[in-house]
Image 1: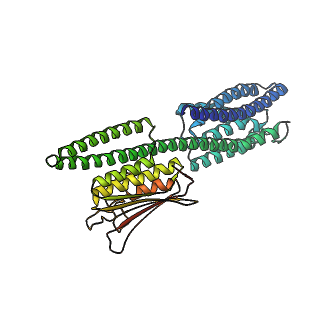
Image 2: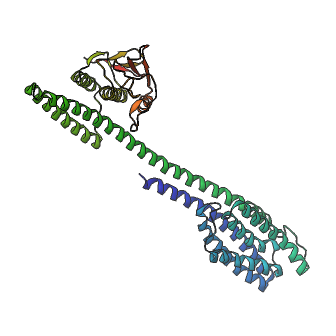
Image 3: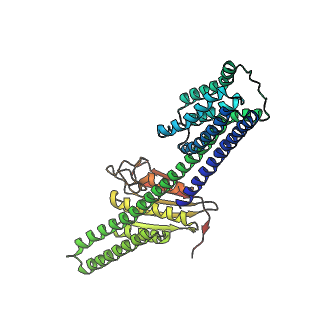
Length: 410
């Protein structure tokens, strides 16, 4: 169900955001405690102001993390949010030049803010912002030394190495977290696309089955109605019987269509074979059935039944066959269905049942019908479809093979 994957993606984002917020919170805590330790040691007013500004900068950094959900290169949020992120960090950087605290500590908030902004920019701008942030990080102790005259001694405080390591890992952590989040979003997008394709494929399958049912039955109804019309004056009783059969076929078509819509239709292969013989015989063609054991696989039966329907419909529609043979041969590893007719004419289109020498279907057909559609159905169950004509060009043979186990029927 669509709601479940959506919750999974949301949960992944919460975990990603939580890890980013934890990293920033931990780094800001170390920086603030280091600045607070400097204030307690020196009782410097400037350092006290820096502690307050650091808390403000930390709050804006944590809030800005929420905008990372758009992913890398996703674009900056409202400019006021970016200004609110950079302003306290820049003030800490400037005021830190005159503080007695560790100069590197005062430069970290601006570096952290630059790392956050860089994640939302395109790659060229991202690199430029990170380089600029790194320059401000390195230049701060140098400027502080030039302004105050106190030399910068890295490692003067116990947490200097920890702050330096976390600062170096900050952009790496952000970019890898954003990459992971983008992968999750992409996978979810592909999952949704796959679901839409599955729905489309099912619609095409439904349309194909509906075409097979209606096309076949309508062809038979048309044939029997034509015969009944011709026999009205010659043999009214026979015409009445044909009309009765037409009504029954229409009723059967309606029932099968309703079953198909309800999703309960199963192709009865043996009924399809018998129906093909009756219809072809009614059209004036002599039809012979030579049947071996039926395949036990329902999918194979459905595919072969589609071959029988398609071939029968096209023989009626496009050929002048007088003899049709339908043969089902069973071996230890496959079932082979062969349909042969002698009704090929020069004007017959290249369809499965018409029987031309070509293997291409030049007549516009619905998806799932014609040689191409039959091959798709058989390929779905591991089967194949072959066609051929004899040297005279009047006898057409269609051979469908399905490699499945079989069920021996009485």
